Image (cartoon, rainbow, N blue to C red):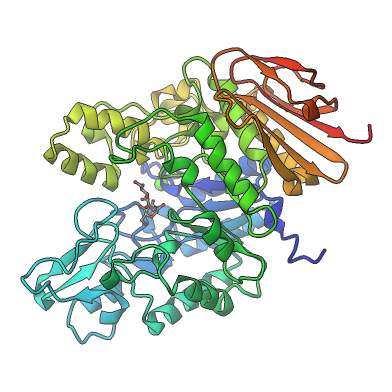
Length: 550
Ligand code: TEU
Ligand code: CA
């Protein structure tokens, strides 16, 4: 097979770093690039292929860097361009690539383009953004809402027009219909590519083809043409990974983004497995129990839809989502078992797994009691709006503790020292008090830790083509307790069995899975063969690799 049929990211595991919360090198309470460099040995031992860095660019930090005021400068609190180049080089020396977050649906309102655009309707940069006159009777041009609450339009008094922003008013949307804007973005991307990065994670890339006048935000008519142009003008000839964040992606559109001959992206992040567990009306702020049958259905649907073309990303968490073990596992009764079970199930699927910082040691959701403890702009906006709408503060905080974005953003827990060893100063957001039990240092010295389990899973993917390329088939789809699937390649079959419950359970093994082989992963004792039934302990998960001609 040619290199393009077997790109490096097929066997890769990616580690996501949220720089602000990862490792602080200078005691100002904010994670930084030198702090990341100090932890590269840890990541090398974990075995990851590349790091996706959430934004490190210059920014007023209204949305922690997802509001960029200079695409070619590093935020002062994170370090310098020289630090960044050193990170790329030091990571490369350890076989690790650096994937940058490309945030080009919008910029910061402090970006010189927007500042200039605001000076005058005839500014050279006016049409880098999206401006509309007020509606005939006055007021917003239309009723498109902002993701973070309120209208997606804000009035700019001095020039008498509204500008469009799908996130905060400090994140004006860029106008992709303008070829000059697109050209500026491509130049910037090439400038970073020339510095030796390994790829881009593209923030809300499904939104760049917006046509607000027609009420279209996601997956607009020109989206794929823009991505093909971007591919041709920037990374087309380079061996990099591109992953587009696409909340609106469906299996069909994922084939457009990531299809082999499409010349767009390597893969997308789709969120159906996340949003299927959200409340149909109140979304993530009204927590609902998750339903394994529905979760399996979504994961299985994506496995099958991209089986022969396109490529899946695999993830439980990121910097916007609650901690996986809190959401799908049992942190009080079976913390280790459930964290290991979740990783087993995810990492043995077909696709590229992503590990969000701290997930590999089983970091959990935080429990804040007052709104002052929350830092996230989305949570703070929603707090105001939900209270105005009649929710009590306590109800809102309960919801935010379950699904709010700050759950993922509490500092990485390195040691049992104060503030979990994240900083010697005072952290920008509180450390989860469970750092004394859950931290990297304790995990490193325990061969049965969640961390050891992650290391093993990551190395298994490098060793076994069946994990990378095997055909996926699910069993017992309607069973509410067990997740059972196989991966097959040539004469090999991998059987993955997981109990998603704190209850013991008797699994009736389907005939074709009654096999014996090598147990390549388990979170209790090794299981080498399956008879007609098997008793599964709470959150037990194992994987047996068998050769059919044995
Ligand atoms: O996220 C896109 C996004 O829509 C999320 O904010 C998510 O939908 C929301 O949390 C659901 O309530 C990306 C980034 O990952 C996020 O951190 C940024 O805030 C956002 O884009 C704007 O750049
Ligand atoms: Ca710092």
